[in-house]
Amino acid sequence: MMFSITAPFKKQKKQNNVSSKKQVNYVGCMRNSRKPKDFFKLLSQACAHYDLTLVYFSPKDVDMDRGTANGKVLVNDVWEEREVEIPRFIDVSNFCYKHRSVMNYLGQVSTLSSERIGSKAKLYKAIKESGEFDHLIIPYITTDSPKDVFEFLFQHQEVILKPKIGKKGEHIYKISFIDTNQFMISYETTERIFNREELINFLANLVTNKKYICQRYIHSYDNNQNPFDCRIRLEKNLNGNWEIAINLVRISSSQKVVSNVAQGGYVSELEAFLKVNYPDNWETIQKEINQVGEELPLHIEEVTGKTLNSLGIDIGIDQDGKPFLFEANTAPGVDYALGEIAMLKSGYYYYMLKNVLRDDMKAI
Image (tube, rainbow, N blue to C red; front, side):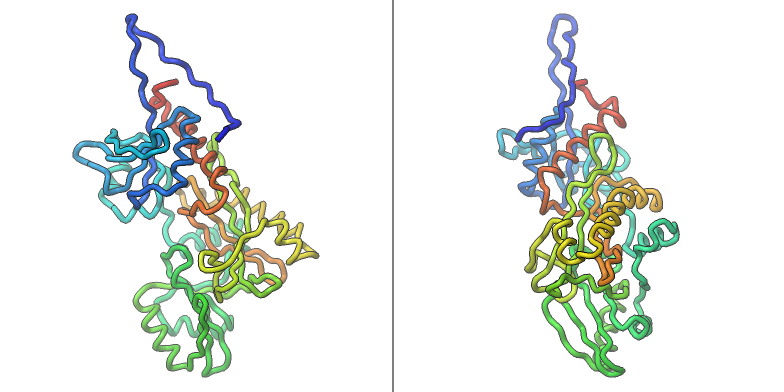
């Protein structure tokens, strides 16, 4: 792979007529899985462009007594085991924070790429209270009470139930009001009619075990009545600023509730999708979505007081063309635009080591 951005590196000077051994600029990448996915090979190759060596490891690979990580380094396209000192900068997935003792230790001895911003409800509240992007927030409540869900359902007729803390669109239910004794529950590819008593029992088993967000349902459907959302995939770049890696639309061909393309569906370019489905106002919608991608990431950092480096912002569009915030995912996947994401990530690693942790770039 060829890269268009070049970064100048100075050669180390000889001291006392003896060539000093070149120091390795390690940068860490920590995920829960001990087996790197294919994307991390691409990321490692992108890092090499900046004279950085990527070390892939999991929280279980950290030796707090020795101050090392038993990670993997890509050598000739093969992952090799290598024990290294804890890198001074680590790209860490938020899912790793369940290993509390390890994360507390790493937070003291290294700089971590991202901090947890809390639950979906906490983020919704922070954005709404700030006022700047409150028009994107869908009316919602956070509850563990079936009674609250009933009252909210009678108010809005259709609602979504999703875990306060969840991932990958799992355990999301749609409840629709038919009449005072009939309700439709949709989940993944199935739909079922419940009477009032059955719904009460269902909610008692669901929301009393785990707090749920109950949201007004937004009809974000294409012309074929398939649910969709717009994914704005962002990373911080070589200058430490947010940059959009890709804008795309995820359309489900089988899901009843969410646009989970992993269970049947496809993706589309944003502009082409909007032209077909919103021919009268597609330019206005596209402009609004682009503005969200350009301004919301920094706003999220400001209102939460947290530093992030990756974001997946999911936007729904109702039948009138009004956008709404579905999710802001701080641990987004790398299913699309792998090359762009690898370039942005590696550039941000270089930025962090060169400009923020200057003493750590040993080869400059």
